[in-house]
Image (cartoon, rainbow, N blue to C red; front, side):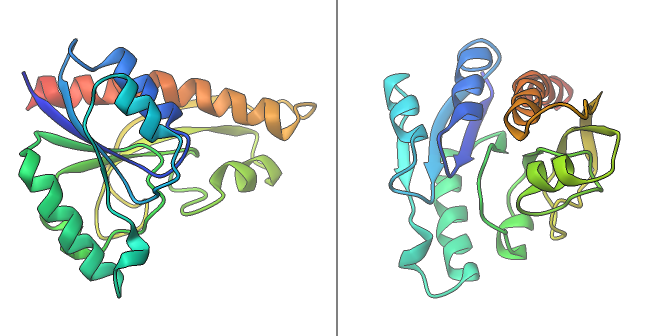
Length: 185
């Protein structure tokens, strides 16, 4: 069975979704790694019996040193794929040149790269919004698109309603992307 390592920083809703839809069905989630010792996703992973590693970025002098430690930790698990699901770190070439990984981004790339993508998309004049899954490269949110799904923005939606639509699509296309990649590799 193919092996996946997931990286996350927050509540872990996309991590929990991967556990539910992928773990032991299409691949084995061999580890969940977070940079945030307070991340809610820690409990979700541990409850599912998935090993959790906490690698706090604040313990490192710079991004490159953090990425060196992260790469070493990931390589210990020898995964077929690394999935960034809400991992709020900009990764350096130290990581991107050595680790085969995909990222979930809550906007239709190339629009709204970087942080606060949901809010910026919501506040924009764009009529069509959505979610992207893409390969991680040296360019922030700039790798080749694996899968995208869009919806028409409803002008009467609140930010909460808009965010819920984004989350629903994230929960649909991230597992689909993982299955597609693992099947093709």
